[in-house]
Length: 582
Image 1: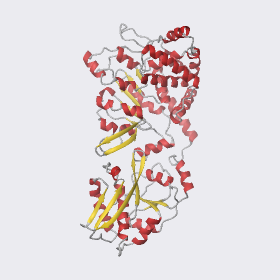
Image 2: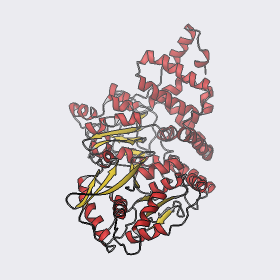
Image 3: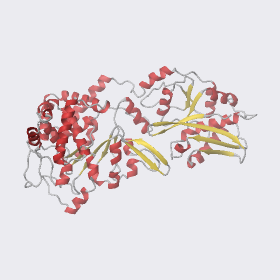
Image 4: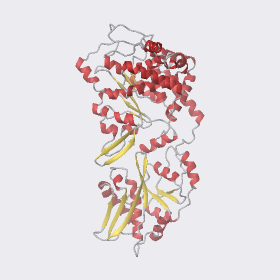
């Protein structure tokens, strides 16, 4: 009767159970590993043979077959299976114990060892050396999660587990620390009882809690960090407002402008405005990175070079996570967006919508999470000065068109904010030096007015704004709630639907405008109570000004005529008056 030995592997965020069986058969002598990639099976076979011989015994001149399931999932891996050495060796020892005259092993009894494996619930993990030593696990978090989720009190994990630098449950039971195959045999027979299942459930709730962290002290630190970040952009309140809206509502953002205007600087500081990871998010990040992050409070910030391929962003033939998955619960920052190969950019369209990526390769198929926030910066043309008010563009017309065509319409539609930015240290209201060919923000622009309102509130009481931002983030990011009454939501929806008939917006554009307007109404409740809804929609369109600039050749940040349009509609159609009044 064969013994089933258990282990586990991590595929994306899923911890997949693995079972290993071994049997003695007739035929050519040797060890055959089935259900594993050929490269790994060839190397593991020699490590396991040498480790077993280090116990003072030799393998019989018979055929040994080791079966690993699920085979289809295992064969997708090119690496990361080395910890299956120990369960394969244990399965072989259990098979040898079923012989009429089992071999003698120094320090253990194979018959007793196999009996305990059948009566208790064990899980083994660890890579073996030729001398029979068990190497430390590179990432013990998946096995900690398995241990804490177990309801069986007779459950044990045998591995060489090291304490992580963040000390996640350093006293987590029921781990049996083994440093060699011989020690594994001895400690299985002399095992200690684990904690109760109730204690494990209690530990599971605090699995990703950083030891020694004070919640009040951390909240004060977050407030100070947000304040110091937004202080950097008070000279350009439009940009500060756009960053605040993006951070509050988790909106994808694209900043375009001339070289040196502060696009990259602003987006790199955007990470300081985001809320900390929740406990579940920390666990997800640790699993997908296949290691315990040094700082589990900070959200991932991935910034691949513009020469990255589609396989690097999405995941290659090895089915390992790409940048979109490594940025899960964080920011994927693509600097110089128009310099990326167009096929690479187009491949981002599905993950942006579905928040996951399904990789189908010759080796198999795997589904990985991709719930990232996309932040991008780009120049509008090769020289960068196409929309500049201070420098003349040196590019030929066809060069500008070819450069801008790298950013397709479907990709731009997936951004909520597409803003043309000026130099951060300058804040001009209107500049007609371009002879009126390129429009800029005016004093009457709703975006300008809202930004000045933000600046006035910031100068009066910055901590009040910071607390409001933290509260909105808690609703949008953590609870996925909309901090607005149903009446306000209906008012925004009706206004956008009516204006769609005038502007012919697509369904995706309507959704982005609605999300932006909802976020702004939560950030500016006093203004939302007295301003026309059309002004907030005009601000949302102004925040998508780069998209309009590419379509019309001008910066699309002019005062909106929608207030008069909605007023005329209200006078001619006496319907939904609440949605059209101040």
